[in-house]
Image (cartoon, rainbow, N blue to C red; front, side, top):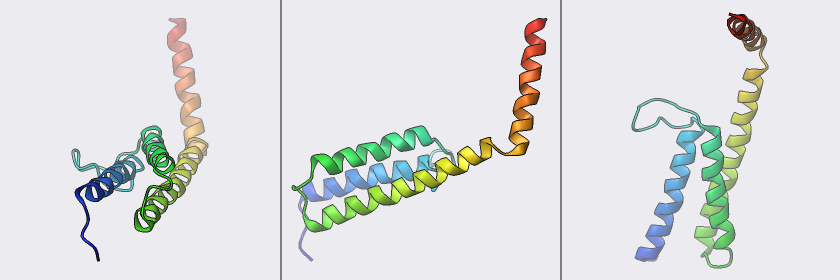
Length: 114
């Protein structure tokens, strides 16, 4: 294995930083600040978009190892994002949540009449 330059190490660190952020935002890893699993799909999408932009902007300028790493990370995160988005969508459509939403809507309507 060849010795990595400072720039190479910084590139890997940047990619892995965004990967870690996206994993936390997707609820795949505990948030180190809170110690809890937290999901923020909007922010996860932004982190994935940043990695995708990086992939586009560096196209043709990466060595095969860097390109493979970035491609794998982006595609894996996108698959997880789709899965988590579907889960969230299905949770919102569950009979329990529909009933809960209707109950809350009735409460709001009755409060607005007062």
